Length: 243
Length: 224
Image 1 (cartoon, rainbow over the protein chains, first blue to last red):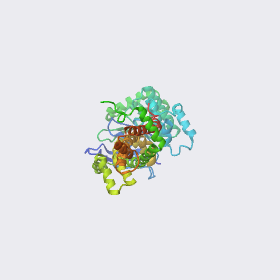
Image 2 (image 1 turned 180 degrees about the vertical axis):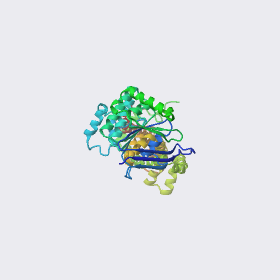
Image 3 (image 1 turned 90 degrees about the vertical axis):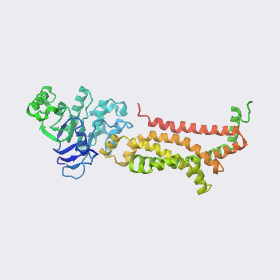
Image 4 (image 1 turned 60 degrees about the vertical axis):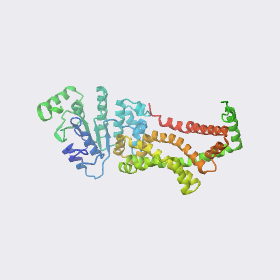
């Protein structure tokens, strides 16, 4: 792959006359972690669905590098979307092309996210935080070239969300690939991303792209994150409402 | 009114009649004939009804087109289809089975169609995104969601099929429970009538205990 080029000229919801997305252009480099920031309901999930190939009703083009075939895409939805009638392990095995291939690999992955002990439980017996970890693991298990994440840590308490973020970064660093992460939480985005992309509402388009200059190892420092936010606030008046 | 032992036989008398009918081989023979018809019509109506129900539940245009046909067949009295089948195809086994299937099919379609309409869109999207393919999507996503509806259709279907088969046998077959019950009616033989009913209830209970309940508990194992 050589990056992803997203060009959506327009996207309408059925039966509506105003577009939800218009003149949207965004390029993602290989192995880049990009966070999309925008108000709720601005069309971020719709954009991810277009990227994932779940929604084809738009004007425009999404190019995955040189190849014309769709790459391996992992998608962590806003709700975990696990199959309640399959165990944790079965849920992950189902997405893997050949589950018999290497059970140890799956064991290791389960161990990394501390789910080995509950691998034979059904999702209904898991807490929300655990279910979200399973959903993340499922996306990683297919060894994606592109990982789409739609507010995957929403409605988790602060310590659980922090753990989940650390885990995400750890998994991503073990095997770098492009990540497009949707959130409306600037702090979360600043901790995770290489680049922030700010989006407008109705129709959605890119207002501003800002690379994050704080080194990854310094991002656990609350002061650095807050200083970065203040800096954005003073420098860019056009994104005030999103900060 | 005094208690007439012929019209109101004691449990004891019924048990004795039951035992004798078993020993003579009459009851097993007729019950077996009815059971065979049940199995045959069930084996045709369930898979066919499931397939049609899924197709109609997932395709709005087809559903709109066939909806009034389904409703028509759902509401035609069983007796009408049975008589028509016998008139058109003759008093043969095929006509009997066909009549039962025609009566049972709309019920299965309507139940399964509800299930197919209510499939979780989120999970179907997940399956598309992770490229499950058709077979895997059916086995792991669609079937588990349809399962309660299939069980519902099985139970209500069994009850309905029994009743229709008996009418079919009464009108045009020379064996089976329906044929026997008609005979007992003519002889006012209430004890035999009740003895056959007991056999009937026993079979249904066994089916429920040995087949349907275990299937249910297996399918519910993931629920809290």
